[in-house]
Image (cartoon, rainbow, N blue to C red; front, side, top):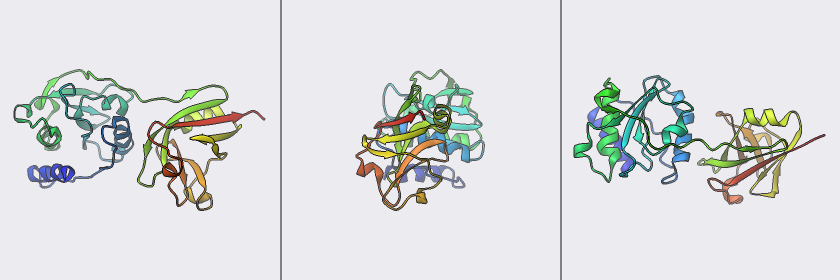
Length: 246
């Protein structure tokens, strides 16, 4: 219902808007998961696109903000998602003040974030929405821990097919592997994968498969199966990669 209300509000204020829904399935209150979805999606949209993130956005300590980064606009709450989204500070940030007098504190997305996004889509400047400010809540992407013979990461996203995405990148994996054999342990040492595939169908149905997804993150799946359910994996579950010298 809430997602439909938000989309309806956009179309009521700006009938010609192109509304694209990235996801309504982010785990409640999970900023890390939501930021991953937005971080890996926004760059596929045209410059000037306005992106709204409404996860854990209602709170006295998380005021609404808008910022410009990499040619795109982002509207959300000052709850840490900006630091998870960008590796460098935004080009410009404002605290949204224009709509807050009549805002409904129980649905900030509808009463503040959506009107701000619509104004930006109409061509308004960030300064029209409020005063320049610094983001107060800082969160940074969790990086895997590395040693000479292993890397330990975490599950950061579980998609609708129950495939799990980790924070282990292809760049770090290749740099540490140096041509060595390896094993990927998911959940426990009982489930091991010893090769990187190009596609899910590279293994027989029902078998585990590891690959680097389009974002360059290590992903573990099961061909025609649901690996997160089978291995009882959740957000922040451990993923271990062990390298073996010849």
